[in-house]
Amino acid sequence: MKGFTLWFTGLPCSGKSTLAERVLGILLERGMYAELLDGDEVRQNLGKGLGFSKEDRDTNIRRIGYVCKLLSRNGVAAIAAAISPYRAIREENRNAIEKYVEIYVKAPVEALVERDIKGMYKKAIAGEIKNFTGISDPYEEPENPEILIESDKETVEESTDKIIRTLELMGLVPGAPAESEYSKEEEEKIKARLKDLGYL
Amino acid sequence: MASTFFGRKQKRACVVGLDGVPYSLLRSLMDSGVMPGTAEIVSRGRIEPMTVTLPEISSVSWSTFMTGRNPGEHGIFGFTDLKEEGYGIRFPSFSDLKTPTIWDRLGESGMRSVVVNQPSTYPARPIPGVLVSGFVAIDLARSITPVRYLHELERIGYRIDIDTERCKEAPDALFSELQALLDARRAAVDLLWESERWNLMEIVVTGTDRLHHFMWDAYEDERHPHHGDFLAYYRRVDDLIHHIHEWGERSGVENRFFILSDHGFCGVKREVNVNAILRKAGFLDLPGGVTSLEGITESTKAFALDPARIYLNRESRFSKGSVAEGEAEALLEKLVAVFERLEHEGERVIRRTFTREEAYSGPFAERGPDLLLVPRHGYDLKGRPDAASIFGERRFQGMHTWDDAFFFSLDGSVLGAGTGLNIIDVPAKITGSLGVEI
Image 1 (cartoon, chains in turn blue, purple):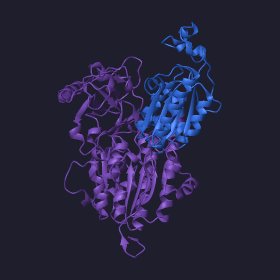
Image 2: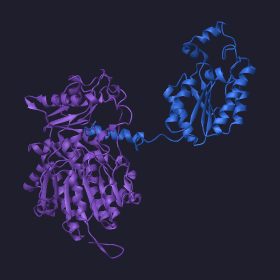
Image 3: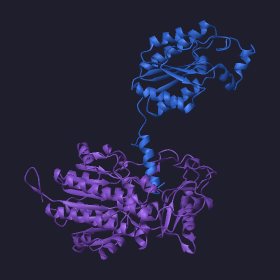
């Protein structure tokens, strides 16, 4: 399989990292080379010294994009999970990377405030954290993401399935190894027949 | 003898499979005049009762028949099996069969087979000849290879199985369903007999098994409202056997004519829930309300899959495994003792236990259960994970038996002098009659 970049974008606590880790696990299971560049972890390395001004944020996203580009062109599925709030820099990465798939993990701020176990949203609302995306900093929604995840309406499993299925359809990810040669519908019918004869 | 493209004559053989027909029933129906055609054929050859591989269900028995190998080699241990990871259930398909079939082996010698309604061959894959899959086949289009016969079989009204839903709602419908099914099999054989070049013609009648599951009491009880229907169905089966034999005589089959069943059958007294036994004896811990084995806890030592396949919850195999390899043998002994003590109204329930090593050999034996139970006739062992009580009311009239299956060969010498015939011995005798060793 050829490499590609899977770019998760969305507000803090929207579920980007959770989904990115799930997808990473599946890609590795399917025998792909894959690497996760998670926003928080990358900031401590690639983005050391950068703050949260628009310029610093853009630099951080541009650097992650550059690493993704290198990984992708060498056959790796590069997965980035970063808030990446500004549309222009995301488009810059899209244009620089041959196979780029944007996943917008969308959820209303009210739902995220409720979900936020670290209490960061509350601190931001109280003014204790500055430049907090969605509260005191803007987030420019993707206009045409390849995949839209509504994390307040879907389960993690549903969202993961949607991403993997889309990647399969795009020919970027090999299909799951067949546990059985039966379709789900056939499996249900077989189950029913076996039950009818007392085998289940 | 059949002609080939090069003018050389090749041998031909016919096999009729009767799913779930016990030796004792066949003998009784022949002796009482219900199956005169079969009785006449059988009188000219030799019939022997036989045991089958374990567990005694069609998917395993027919896989043994079609390969001549035991489950430790062919890899089919039941209609269900455990997924690679965890305790989830999967449904093995034809592609799970690990060894070549007798049709493949005959094909290596340039021989072709026509196989109609063979259980456990779905989805059908190409064989040297024609294959029409049987139970648990779903989609007719995926049950036929080569697929060019699909249209023809649809035209003659071929069906895979009875409509069990209809039969549950209206039990009287069972007999019309069974008749339609038998007619369809016969029409398929008639179609393929002349249109295909073949050396082995095989047809499996599975309606017999369905009839026994739902109406075994109609056979045993002469006052049963469907006793006459039961016998009438067997007259039709007799007619089919006679028909195929006659075709064979005209087509160079000579004495290479065989009939077999894949397991025996008997009436049900009680259902016996193996997992309930394990739970009450402290080997299985499944929290209340949980209906799947995926919900077992790490304190579980053993669990069962249908019908009586017992797996130790080995640390080396399962994610929640709790049995170290060093304690497996002692645990097995404890389990055997529990099952050997099990009684119902003063009668022992378990006739015999088999360890994995006793039942299986080969590269896939370790994927099989650690222990298998063979019940006494009348005790229908079930593997429902959440069954509350050990003994339950019967839901079906008939149950499979490990013994009392049979094998008939028109050439009696094929059976040899030995006794203790098992289904695993049968395929080599059939291919051997065609000059092919497997």
